[in-house]
Amino acid sequence: MSNRAVDVLSEFIFNTHYQDVPDQVIERASDCILDVIGSAVAGHTQNGTLAMQSVMQKHNQGDLCSIWFSNKTSNVISAATVNAMAATSLDIDDGHRMAAGHPGVAIISSAFATAEETNATISEILCAIVLGYEVAISVALSRHSKYNDSTVSGRWSGIGACVARSKLLGLTNSQIGNAILIAEQHAPRVSSAMHHGFAGSDVKEGIAWSVLSGMYACDLSVNGFKGYPDTFEQNILYDPQTIKANIYNFQAIDGLFFKPYACCRWIHSAIDGLLTLMCKHQIKAKNIRAVEVSTFDRAVNLGNHLVPTNEVEAQFSIPFCLAAVTLKGVQALTPLDKKLIGDPSITKFTKKVKIKKNLKMEEMFPAKAPAIVKVEHLDGVNEIIIDAAFGDPTNPMTRADLQDKFAVFSKGILSEKKVSSIIRIMNNFSRLRNKTPTNLFNSIRSLK
Image 1 (spheres, rainbow, N blue to C red):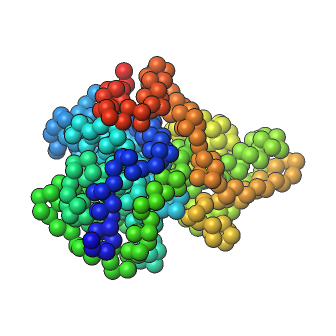
Image 2: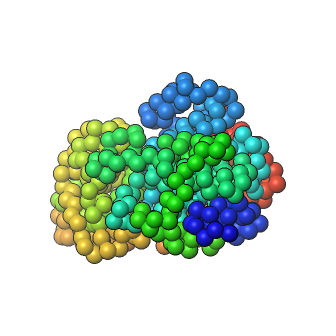
């Protein structure tokens, strides 16, 4: 066998089957599915989602696969792209701490649409999803920061979509490797995103588009299209040894974080810190004079608009998110309440929030996304360090927590009966490994 990184990856994908994956990884993959479905429930009517749906259905006809919670269908790649857009639109999808990006939406939307196309079993779906996480995150971890310093998830999330589809389609070893190369080279670069602090655009991190390019990479490979063969061997953009070292150990899913609030993950430590101080010291919102957030550079350089003009700007604003939870409670971000945009009381509070870079916090990133929060109020000054927000691998959300999150974000959209039904299906998902997930697919096709 060749020792090129892409060949090691393709061999791993081709030869790994459901029984090779540890049970605890399979179970956590089921949790990931529930989290992505819940993210899509909350985001399925967002403007970006509806625009993507309209365009995809106009230019890509077909009725094979479901557009979640819409009663509509499209061809396999278009359906997966729209579903990914829904699930990423509110910024509540999973992410990987060290990869500093979001893998799950791309992988699971691709796997589900392809599974509808191929009539795959639950064991085949779960295996494909796990492999998608393993390979995409291995590539993300191997990036050389000097030449590949962007944290835009779309640059590598499509590789996960490609892997999941490749496995479910039963591509050959060589076809899988070539598909991965094509997916990497056709990935959306979203070069200006970081200059905008990720704010103000439905493009966000290009995750949905990476699903389209990643899935097409599989079909292109089958038809003989070739990618640059030594993409991972140049030791310029990627370290091939790191890619090879990070597979076969099934640790990718263990490094995931899950998000209780619908905003950028880099803001969550600041939210947890402020809420903890307010609770511990019984600080009332009306008595807060100033809030100082000392954090790492990437968080400092988010959009951080004091007066965001839309939901995407709000999702990437530390001052807005802190003002929202302080004045309105955590329900203001579960999901983000767009009625608060332009609210005079929120705007007044955002001006009390100061953000500054802290070298100690910077040294901890990306293993952690920490913040020091200092609150000045009528009765004094209090300070706290949060180095692992709720949902981080070292401060994890349990299956029960994720089920609660699903119920919260589905409230008012799905009936309580439907919420309970989907949770029950996912609780038992892996136990039905030899069956096709007909009940789950039927449950997520519509709101009824």
